[in-house]
Length: 414
Image 1 (tube, rainbow, N blue to C red):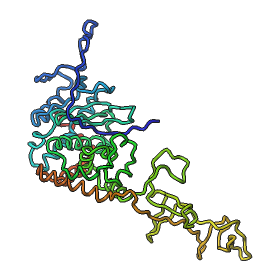
Image 2: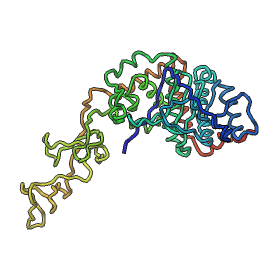
Image 3: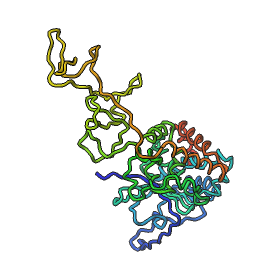
Image 4: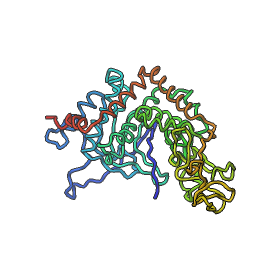
């Protein structure tokens, strides 16, 4: 089964050819799913309340057209796409304002920043854009600082705030970062940090833990400089403290290899953060790699391999006092496992390993965040940490009741 990797694209300028459609009126079909947009709203329309809310909250305030009806001329004809449902469009519209536009208003104290630098079009697409050749899925696009497209809307789960945060809010902040750096350039010092470690062709095949150790926050961020910059900003803003703790742990490691020496399955990339010597015998031929989930982290600070113990030599021999000795005369049990002086099996000791990839992932990620922090402060007069705190507060406080109150802004319109 092919595995698909999500990514978010940025296009400097996009021109799409309009596709002519033959008329169906001669066959009795007068309606179209792509109605002409006019300035006048029809109070009798099924979507009137939503259209009025969009006009009052996006168009009138931010000069932004919120497109939820799928327009063929606004999409890439290479992909087989489907419209977003009305219900999900309403939910994402109110959530986008709550988690994106309102956050910037809270931090800057005004709607003017997003009005000036935000996109002019925010478009929703129900399905993802799947590229079966590369095994990738496009979940967002930023086009020339003018338009942001959010895809895969129909799979949105409004009951899972962390999925919403990772799939949609992250995309919003990622795309806005692209718009901002298309206005004011990415700092040169950022552009120089990871030269030689980007992989534009095979980023989707890189393990997230490996790229963390190389100083990237995600595999997609390791594809090129501008994606690295946008991913650093968006993930810093949207990822929780617990998620960042895992990234820092991964970044502190640097001993990686393909497959697992203890497994017959070499199809997946496995990282070795620790090693042990088979049977506690210090010998390079007996050195094996293992991952954190195979380790017991003991209170005394030692690490031992789960469920594995040191075996004695040869067949154990029972003594007159009922004990057993191996062929070297060492105390063991009847199964041949060596015992300590208190009669306990001796566990296999696990050792930490040195960072071997030549990159201090923690230091590099820290540098990138600091550069982004300075760039926001000096170029935009915005506190990046204040943005993060505002988003994290809204994520942690999210409840079904909050979503329902946001929905009522639409459904309650007369």
